[in-house]
Amino acid sequence: MDGPVYHLEGVVKAKEAGMEDFVGPLDLILHLLAKNKMEIQDIQLSLILDQYLAWMDRRRELDLEVASEFVTMAATLLAIKSRALLPRPPEPAEDGEETPEQTLIRRLEEYKLYKESAGRMKEFEQAAMQVFSKLPEEYPLPPQPVELTGLSLDGLVRALERILA
Image 1 (cartoon, rainbow, N blue to C red):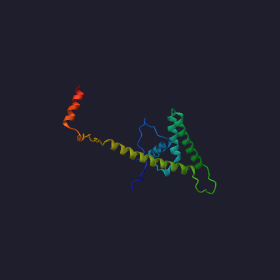
Image 2: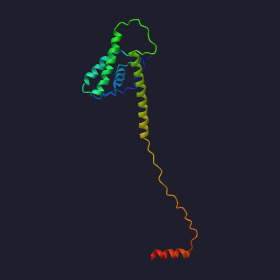
Image 3: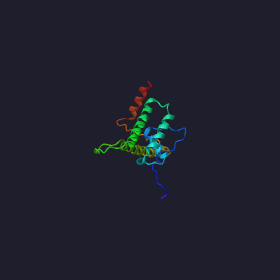
Image 4: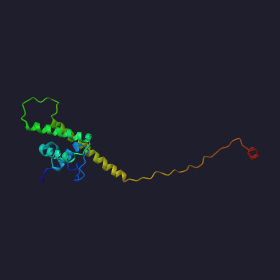
C-alpha cells in the first residue's frame, strides 16, 4: 500500500491564507483534520487543539454570537484533552451514555455527511444552471364557429338600421 487514504480531503476544500472563514467550529475542526491528514476517529487532540486555539487568536474580531460557538467547542476540546491526561478511575460504563470524545466524533461524522451532501447538491445546482429550456409559445386556437339560429336576412337589416339611426 502507498499509504492511508484520508477521506476528509474530498470534503474539505483547501482554504487560502486570507480566506479562512468557516461555517462553524465543526467546519474548522474538519479543516484541521484534513490539513493534518487525520481521520475523525484518530484525532491527535493536542495538535488539533493547538491549531484551533491559534486560529481563534488570529480571529479575535469575530462577533460575540459566532465567537461563542468557537469558544464552546474549544472548551469541549480542552475538557477532552484534560480527561485524556488524567488517570482514569475504574468505573463501570453506563449504557447509552456517550463520553465527550464519542460525542465529538459522532458530531464530526454527522457534519461530514451533511457537508458531503451539500457538496453534491451544489454540483447538481451548477449542472442545472447549465440547462436552458424554452417554454412553448402560445399557439392561437382557431376561432370557434358561431352558430346563429333563428336569424334571417330581413332581421339583420332591421337591426343594422336601428344601430345607424
